[in-house]
Length: 595
View 1 (cartoon, rainbow, N blue to C red):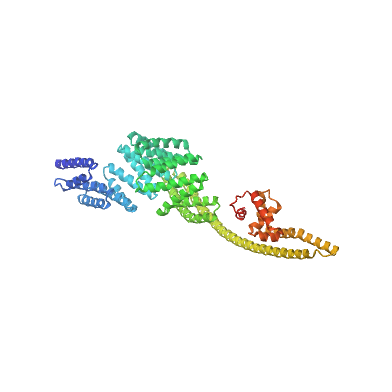
View 2: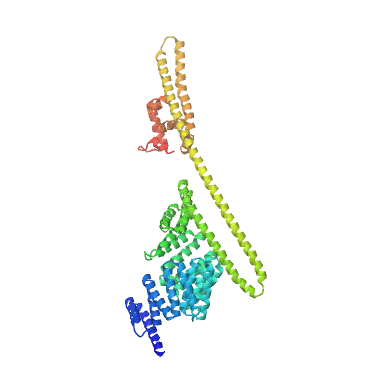
């Protein structure tokens, strides 16, 4: 018996020594553990402990080796009926399964370890498995089970007077309360954890808890309290150069400034947070996710500042990461942000493209939110059930059952209302999409019709112009013929011919121009109003010359229409250019087309 005790003391001292050596030399640590296993004097229970120590070491380095040593320890513990060894082996198996993303298997091993510990003296490993198991249930959103185990662990930590685990269980229970929107309880438990971490001098945990309570006060819109805790957290994390924690703190401070409309301050915090996270190891998944969310937050601030180009740039970076990782939360925020930007920029095609990407993802997220809400209702119902137990002890069970039935009816009614609301909103969205499609088709049809009308009007204008030119040329030829015979002897006849020439000369240009102007205004309604608005000093003849020029008529053609000499028209064009303020190298026709 004494020999066994001495051997156990020897193995304990050896393991402690190896743990110290491991910090400096991993290979020496592993070799030493192998030597312990090979030693002839060591008993089977100590071999089990050593196998499990090796398994624990390899969990973070090589899961296959960790699994192998855990199985060896478990097999030997079963053969020797070493129940505590079996429990620790199941803890190792639980952790290995968790790292392999097999959560259901991990929970099964965790339950076996907890069941074994219920018949054994509790030690630190019991606190470890309660914390692991609660966290696994929390990942599966089984919040009632998670909270039950955290409270169980808290009670045991108090029994063992283990201050560290008291802080851990307070902090983790607070996380469950936060996930189920019980912010007051979450803050209460986080503050208790903060007190313990501060007392123990655990700066990393202390800084993280300060940041957590600050973020919860943000949700309650108590920004002054939130800022106080966040600034305290920043001081602690700067001392440790904890970049990931500093990034979260700057993110929270940025969100406070953003909510208060202090956009420049928000940008400073978000950019500082991005700077911190970009200093992390490139292989760290946390970095990639944090960088993406930082760009998303920056995009929102730039949108509020109406700096759409900068916002677009950050949203594109967010989408790039979101598409690579299939992150629906990133994508849905970015797609909707781009839809808003292109709507503001009056680019309906781009806006429609991104809203079509947004809608299906948003519907999927809503379903997840609805499922989470059901989980929360179940969680609240189970919390209420625990409260009922206390009420039953006081003899008020019948009254509480009636209240419970009423609450259940309210929950069912709420769920029915929620379902009907979702169906109603979905129907509205569907109708909006149908109307949008019909409107788009209608606008397309109207646009095509307008284009046809414009094309037809342009053809009519060209035809009218040709007719005017031909008529003018015809009248000019008549005028020339009459001019040739006006020298006849009869004074009366010569006077009549002279009168006809004057009428032709006086009326031809004005009538032709009026006819042309009516036709041109009909086709190009806004041209003359814009021209007069920008250049009010132009005369009637100047505006007429502008119309001829914008139609690319030559000086000869304008001369034919206006019944003026070509040199006169050249002079008029020169004066028009001066009034419009054109340089020598600027083209008159190109300039008029920009009006």
